[in-house]
Length: 274
Image (cartoon, rainbow, N blue to C red; front, side):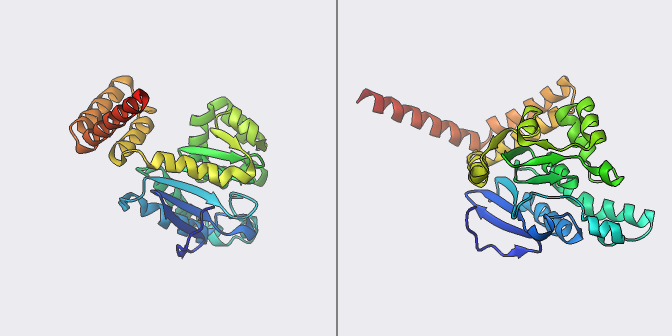
C-alpha cells in the first residue's frame, strides 16, 4: 500500500494519489465489521467524493486479515449498536445509517474498485458487490452468510448479487450461505481478476491509476452510461448515448484528447522513420 500521511476519518483511512482516492477500512481487530462507527466513517468519506474534482477513481481496501466480516455478532447478541431498540427503531436506523453506504456508493460519479483480501462476509460481501470492479487476492472468500444467523441482507446485497450472477445462482448462494473462494468468484463474474495476495494492493492501485488517467468528464459519463444502460430499454440507452456523445464532441476535453492523440501518432511515425 502506498504510504500516506492522510488523517484518519474514524475507522477509515484516506489517501489521495494520482487521482485515486484510497479508502482503507481500518478496524482489523474486529474484522473491519460494519458497526455504527465504521458505517459512519465510510459513509462520510464516500459522500464527500462527488464534490472532489481531483478524485477520478475510488479504491476501497482493508487492513488486517479480512476485507470485512459484516455485522458484529457480539453486538447482535447484546442488541446494541445498530441492533439496539424495537423493530421500528432498528429498521429506521438501518435505513438512516447503514443504507448511507449503499446510496453513496451507487451515487458515486467516478468509478469504484474494491480490493478484497481474506473474507468478505455478509454485509462485507455486499459492500464489495456495490463497487464497479472487484479484484481478489488468492486467499479471498465470499459469502452471503446471513441465513447462518437467521437474517437476510439488510444493505441491498440481494439487488446487487442478482444482477451480477443471475437470479438462480444468487438464490443458491443466499439460501446455502456457502463460502466461495476467489477462483469461483472469478468464474461467476463476481471479481474480474484474481492476483497473488502479495500483489493485491499494487494491482488494484495500478488499475485505479490507469482509470484515473482518463479524461475526467468523459470518464464520469462513461461510467454513468454503462450503469444506467443496464436497466434501460435500448431506445432509452441510445438516447442517453447520443446526448452524452454530443456534449463530449462539442467540449474542450475531447478536442484536447484528439490533439494529444494526433501528436503521439505523428511522433510514433517520425520515430519509425528513423
